[in-house]
Structures are given as structure tokens and as C-alpha cells.
Amino acid sequence: MSSTADMEQKGQGSPKGVLEKATSSHEGNAKWLHAHYDPYSTLYTFSSCIALADLHGDGDNKLIIANLGTGKYDMKLKVYKGTTLMTENTIIDLPTAVCTFFMDTHDPRTPAVAVASGPYIYVYKNLRPYFKFTLPPLDVNPVEQDLWNQAKEDKIDVQVLKEMLESLRADGSEGTLTVRSLRFLMLDPEDMPTFANLHKHSPLKRQTVITCMTTLKKSHSEEDAISCLVIGTESKDIYILDPEAFTVLTKMVLPSVPVFLDVTGLYDVEFRIVVSCRNGNIYSLKKGSKAPKYSIELSSQPVGLQRMGKNVVVGCMDQTLQCYTTKGKRLWVLTLPANVMTMELMDYKSRGFKAIMVALDNCEVHVYNEKYLVNTIKTEDIVTGMKFGRFGREDGALVMTTKGGGLIVKILKRNSVFEEKDSRPGPPAAQNQKLNIPKKTKLFVDQTMRERENAVTMHRMFQRDLYRLRLDAARSYVKALETSMTPMSADPLEPLKLSATVNGIGPSFKLTVNLQNTSSATPSINLLITFQYDEKLYQLQRSSIKVPLLVPGLNYAFQTLVECISDKAIADTIKVFVLRKGKSMPIITGNINMPVSEAQVVV
Image (cartoon, rainbow, N blue to C red; front, top):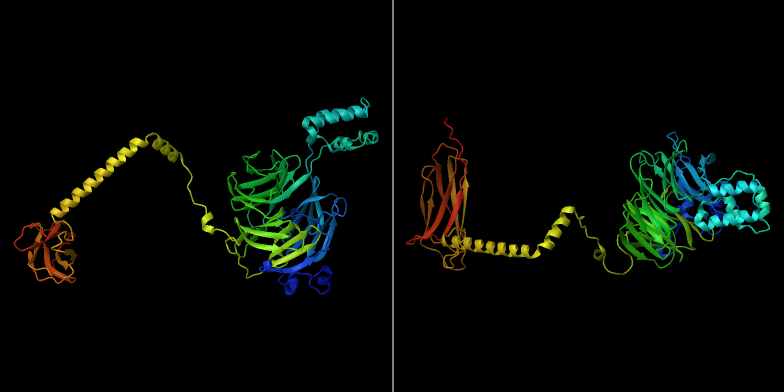
């Protein structure tokens, strides 16, 4: 275990130096190198206020943390190079989110840092203040505006102002009241006249605050492509900002206050925003929509939200991890051993591995691939914020901040392999494998209704057709036996097998008849092979062939030449009969389809 001071003293401020001293700790952390732990970093923050980015274009990713401090003061934006504090900037209000994004295409390609704090977004370029964006002001309640105007003109006293504002709040307009009115109602009665006299001459403004923020690629999907800022506000709105002019490109309205955002796609092409709100629901917004189309009602309040492919994974306060499709269909639910503190997407691009990391209040971080627990990380304290990505020059770094203000850095071993199965004992994975069932079409539904209405009639028709099929098959079989039109003999006293081949392109062909005795010990004698053909088309060298004694199991070949005597490009069938001397009924019969003869060439 190393402290920050030790790292600086030994010159190991970068993750490369940390990696040289990294050691494996805890048996459950065999896939991770314990790179750094400083319990006295005084970093109090959440996952939304942590980012990893290459701020100088030198390939060395820095750690960016918006520190909450004590909640009233000491709020700072801190940038770490390795485990060494590089720079820090004071933030006026509590930060709610930190994002890095590319504003332009200028070289060198260095991202800007956006910090959401109160109603403002502070943009830093090259670690220096660059721009401050203020949320658009909201409309003031006309009744509230009239009350403060009357108080300004001394038409009503402080007591009447208090009663009227309380009446407005009781009517459900608390969310539409200004900060001035809300603070006025929170004061003691003896302090209200002083507050009213101090602020009644100032113009009344209603300003919202930012609750969450993320980025959306504008027109290209490359990592260094220009991105737009997507912010959620306390006034139940979603804003998409232009990265250059910082104007509002799109505004969307939600039924509740957004707390977590996840964005996919491109702004100029097609995009989807998945939002979890304070009312315990998840909403899906698409390009061109001003309001959500789909809604997912959760069993408890959301603690974290991540997108995995086309599915949404959300951790809830009832110790469950739930997975839904974007249309609201629940795929699975897992019960966790402790409360969820925060969530993070593990996207290990060099291995093509994606998983969900869930920090619990029992000092563990669980890694889930789909619904299967593939790894458990033991930590020294409860993790409140974490970020997985490239830190320094290491691609698989996991940065965590703890409840006590500590900083933990772990690095994924390069030979680590996550098995795609649950590490816990239980039934095999195949038991929980989802079947690929196609969607029901309108034709399928109509056919199902028709089958339900006419089930008896359809069954009777099926039985009748089945009986007719069996009867036709039996008749064909009997006819074949009677006429010996099968390549194998059905007579147990004459077990023979017949096959024939034709060689040549014409007009002369060689016809080969193969005959085999399939009995176990009885030889066949007194057999004769004859041919039936159209004498206008063909002429055979031997129209009948005497068959010698056939030894069981051996294959006998008999050959004859066939001459096509017709100059017409037609072909016919030659029948082969195997007979016993003195009997007119053939034992077996074969049909030979002759090929079309080539024209005779005269030289």
C-alpha cells in the first residue's frame, strides 16, 4: 500500500511508475493489480464527476475530478497526472457532472472540460477558464410576480405575502416558485420583513439548475470527433447544446426531473437518449421527439444507469440489478448482497469485452457480463465513485473514490480473461439461455385465430388426407411388388440387388448391369438378363445375357453395347429384367434413362 507522498518522493507519479511497484492484493482481485491507495486524498465525489482524458494530446491520460469538498466550501476541479495533483481550480457551487469533449477540429486535438455547477456550465480549455454557459431563464409565475410587485409598492404587508406564497405552494406550484420565494418561506417570522425589504426591489428571476450531463457525437463517431453537450435540468427539461456557439439546438420535456443520462448515436443522423428520473421511471427519447415515447416503471428508485448494446441496465435502491430493452421489456433481475452505491460501464476495447461494474456498500465491486457475475473486487472502503478507461498509458485502469475520501487505482492485468459464465455455483448457463423466438406477424396472428375457430374441421381434414396418403402408398408398394419394379427383390427365395450404369456420349454407349446375391449362404442359378427398348431408337449388341451361378456377397458386372440409330436428338428408357428360366414374371426390374446421343461426326 502506497500513499501519494511516497509516490511523489520515489518519482512514481505516473501510472507507468505505479505499475512497476504494483502488487496483487486480495485473492479475489487476482485479475487486477493494486496500483495505488491513498485514504487521505480528501476526494469526496461521485461517478458523474470523474473523467479520464488526454488533455495535452501527448497520449498520457489525466484524471479529472470535481471535488464536492464539504458541500459548502472547498469545491474544486482537480487534475491528476498519475497520482500527483497537477492543477486545481475553485468551483463556486456544488458540481453535478464533469465531461470532456472536443469543441473544434484545431490541432493539436485536445478536449475541453465541461463542469456543470448550479445553473452554469464552466468550460475549461487547456486547463484554463474558457467559457461560461448559463441555462435559459424560466417564466415566472404571474401570481408570484404580482405579489412581489404589490410588496414592492407596499400594497400588502409581509404577513399577507407569506400567506399568499404558502397558498401557491400548497396548490402544487412549489416547483414553479422562484428561489427568492422559497427562501422567504423558510425564514423565521421575525426575519421575513428584513429579507422582503432587502430583495423586493430586485427583478424577480426564476432559474433552474443542472442535475446531469453527458456528451453526444455531432456528425462523426470517431473518438476525437466534435461532440454536443446533453444536460438535464431541475425543470424537467433536456437540452442539447451546440459545441461551438453554445446555443440550444434541441429542447425536450420530461414528466419528472432527470437524474441519469445515457446517449447513443449521432446528432446529425439519429440518436437515442435514455433517462432515469426522480419519479422512479426510465424514459426513452429519439431524434425529432419533444417528449418520451416509451416508459419503464421501476420497482424502486434508480441508483445508476448504463447502456449495454440495445439493453439498459439499472441498479435500484431495493438491492436489485435490472435489465430492460429500450421498449420497456424486462429481460432479467438480479438480487444483490448489498445496497448499490454507483455503477460504471467497463469497456475494454483491446479485448472487445464489455461489462457492468456495480459498487456495493459492503466494500465490494461486482463485475457482471450480461446477468453473470464474472469478477469481484475487494476494496478497503465503500466506493462512491469510479471510472474505467485509459489512465496514463494503461488502457485497463479503474479509478475509484471512497466514502472516506480515499483514492484507489487498480490496473487490469493484460493476461486477464473473464469467463462468460457465472462464477457463483448454480445451474448451467444453457438453462438461462434466451431462445431466439421471432416476432409475431399479423399473418401469424390471423392464422392462429383461424385455427382456433376451425380446429375440429381442420383436424378431420388432416385425418382424411393422412388416411388417403397411407392408402396411396400401400397401393404403390403392392403394385411395385407385383410388377417387380424395385431394384431389390422382395422374394426371400430370390434375394437379388440390381444396379446399372451408362458410359459414353453417343451414338455408341456401354451399358453395365451389376447384379449381386444378397443372401447369406444360398447361391442363385438359372438366371437371365433381358432388355426391353424402342427398336427405332436403339440397337443392342446382346439383347439377352445368361447369368452364371451367383455366389452370395459378390458383385457381378455384365456389359453390352447400345447403338443409337436415330438422328433425332431424343432419348428413351431401357428396361432391364432379371428372370428365372421357365418363368415369365421378372424377379427384379430396373429402368435406365438413356442420355441424349451426340451427333455422329463423319471425317
